[in-house]
Amino acid sequence: MRNALGDPTAVYYQPDANTHVEAESQATHTNGVLIDLARREVFLDGEPLMLTFKEFELLAHLVENSSRTVGRDELLDSLWSAGDEHPHERTIDVHIRRLRSKLGRLSGTVRTVRGQGYRFFEHPEVVVWAAPEYSI
Image (tube, rainbow, N blue to C red; front, side, top):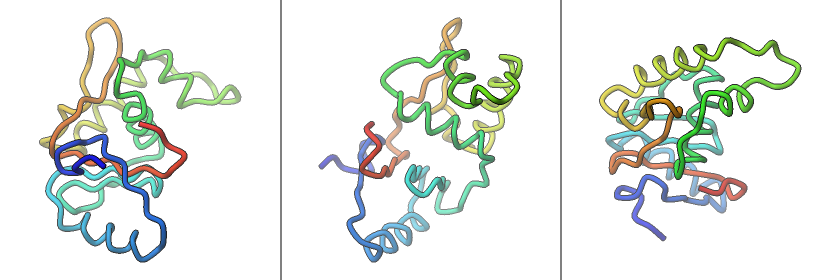
């Protein structure tokens, strides 16, 4: 298994509740960003980030597709279901800006690829925890 502090794509599986409680307490003492996809929680330097539903969905989609650049159209299709009114493509820019603001000094992990879209870049201070159904 890859080192969680050195590899932001390291995946940890919690086989029982006690392990998850231990992992959660470790998160509150960790510097950097912890993204827990299974519990839909994000921590910055041990403090929970209050992300909106769409901000978390956006971050999760970028993390899950970190090997490539994700275009605005794909993000719009992913974040808004067919029944919802399709927002203007610049709505994604607003959500990205707010997400970066909340990520603070690690905002550079969500980068713009000019003319193509957005991409999640690995950083030694970013750890991603995922449930078994996630593949990163």
